[in-house]
Length: 373
Image 1 (cartoon, rainbow, N blue to C red):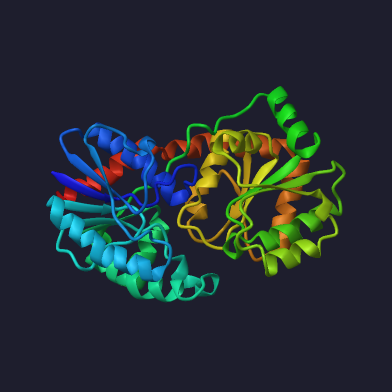
Image 2 (image 1 turned 135 degrees about the horizontal axis):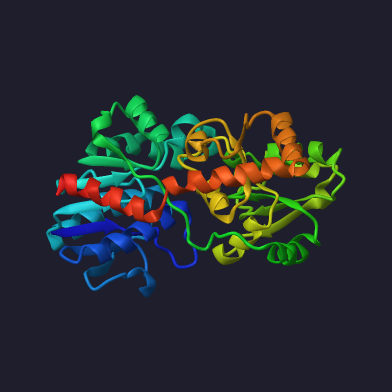
């Protein structure tokens, strides 16, 4: 079979959540199924690291998908042409986009519908494109996949897609995330926090990630902190202006916040493994990979009690109302003051993490593909 794949998010040194999903699943699927021919469709020059096996043929088409008008041209004109030219039997898209102008069978992975619930987080005309096209993409697919039961229910409710047409393929975790011994943790803290204990935030600095309330909670926690605890922030300041910047500027203890910017996974895994806890009190997630990364790094987790996060965390994290600064601050205090609680959460995390792996993700996605083939 000829399987065409939307690989536009495979960008060297720029892989984000969906990019990692694409990378990890396709790496396994293509090598495990040499009997099929895969055509990876890129919107710009590709790196050889993404050509995983001999049965992968790369194709570059334009235009580069940098804004909604170019998205439309790319998926409604360029994609149908290449699918027809290679005589594709299936089109796999791992980022939610499809083409409405082709009759080729398709498997579409929709990771979340955040834009339906929080349109204010997204600028026009992106908001218009999402709200108009994603429902059409969902209905166009021969079958859908998504990364949590929460998003499966969301797609069913908002787009009226039957449950039987939506498969859950949970995310996995990068193998780099492993625990460190005590001396290694001491060395990492000396390097990044002056030897002090620290909480960790990981993610794009965006309103949806709730960093403004985390800043407020950390300030509240610090009032009674006797350990000179820091807050390390890992992520790009792309959407820094507004509530997030204002919350930071209003902090009494902003000198204890350390910004590391975008950090490579190899180093992030060490920073994660040396922290008191990951604070991941996001307002909306389709999955929440950092929760799983923390479980593998054997770090305690504070996360939200809404959307998909309780599903991923199970009983292995402290769940908080992300809109409650006081709840987030109290959870920080519990983690900081109670080593037995941290140890118990880490132990539960070892059990919870066994439910998720990229091998399981790839197997589940392939079974979804086979239903169409």
